[in-house]
Length: 289
Image (cartoon, rainbow, N blue to C red):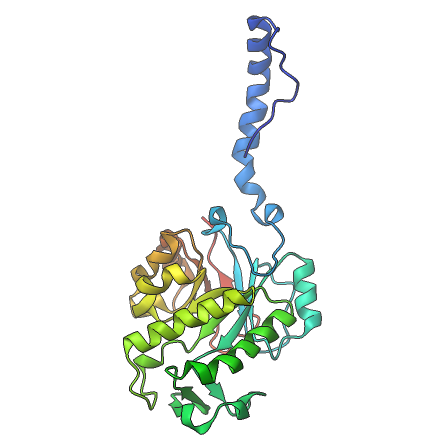
């Protein structure tokens, strides 16, 4: 923060007068510098736009919320909201944007659900195995970019139309699962990079959800990361390519004591919270550094 003198300093002032005035002003200047970090970063942030900016100087200071069930609580004290684009209304996003909150749209890119409004747009040739734990969802053949691109582009446009400035790409790791297709590491890498480029072409900031094995390769292509349970899985260090480049890592644990895992994740520079698995409004954030 640049501190301007409280008075004009003409070059003709005698040195003794200047020294006395500087001595009188010094305590006030020191107080301003010491108190600046305590005032909170949110009031000074540039209001979010499209695509959402992520100022490097705040990379380790975001508070965030991830809500996919229940009425959206727009009063939660968080800078960043990760929400479902179909369930969330334009009224809710407008209320959040009026408070200068950054809005991230969760988009399934490697799978689809039979209940999705656009489910019929995925031809049988790209529909794979059932996603474990989600009987109504199936993996997609991410090798067929020309077929998937128009549908995914419209999903991104829905996000932008509702006021989101960023997209978090979920199920972008089908190669790690029994997807029903012989997907390789390189197949997924190409698909994820194409998605990041597509998001940017639509003025949306792209974020990578999980897919930890590809973080080192994909960090340059994405603006932020969202991670589930890197503490429980013992893989938090693999997310450092994001924080090393002053990019946010939004991290959640569903079990464990925040007073214990926060020490590790805040030390890594992550924005961490504890949530229930149904991702309702409740959250327990880690303190900011």
